Length: 188
Image (cartoon, rainbow, N blue to C red):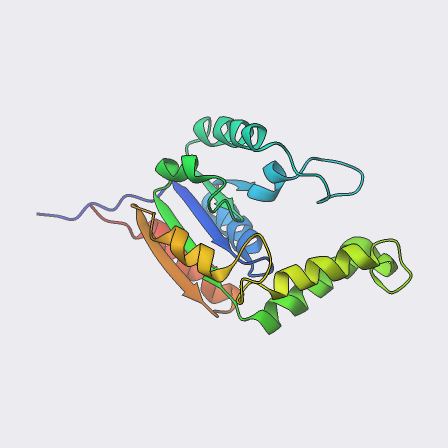
């Protein structure tokens, strides 16, 4: 009997802030002509000062459900662990990306500076927000602050019934290749 290959069409790529999930998803979507969605676009209200006001959870889920159910081929990046569990049945493939803390924090510092410029330095208008965000991101492995933690992500991954995989400490190119292979080389 000949194996038939069917590409995965509804993928969730998640990990700690700064692990590269959005970048990986965007590149994979460009290569596959898939639609890209990011959980932060739903979780946070669109305001002049981004990433400051959370949307009500029911509104996040309604917006996500609408986009995911009205598109056939997509990758959702970011974390929906626990607050977005009702979306789990959508997924054909879930990919957990883990990058060590020192690499993640350097990426996040660079991103903060690119987004907000001098405002992130002492005396700047975003200094305390940026400092708090980086402290929160640094607590991912220890789980000492609310929100995303390694322990929560690993526990959430055990709830997934579809195919799942972990990418640990790969380069961006290797991570994208791994994701593309997982999507394209699914056989039934």
